[in-house]
Length: 87
Picture (tube, rainbow, N blue to C red):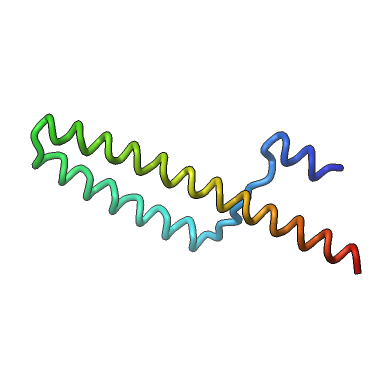
């Protein structure tokens, strides 16, 4: 059961990113950071704090959705395997 060990130890990456995907992700990350820095420069300290709180909550929200999407994909894959073995 090598796959179980790899899942347990985190040796499997659920996303296979191509070089093109990584380049696109890095480009988007740079744009996000640039926009954030430009916005923060224009905000008061209180507004910066509120923005940081918003960003933190949005990141938690995205992580939650990603986790649920992974669970759904995993369940679907297991269901497909079970059904294919039953035929």
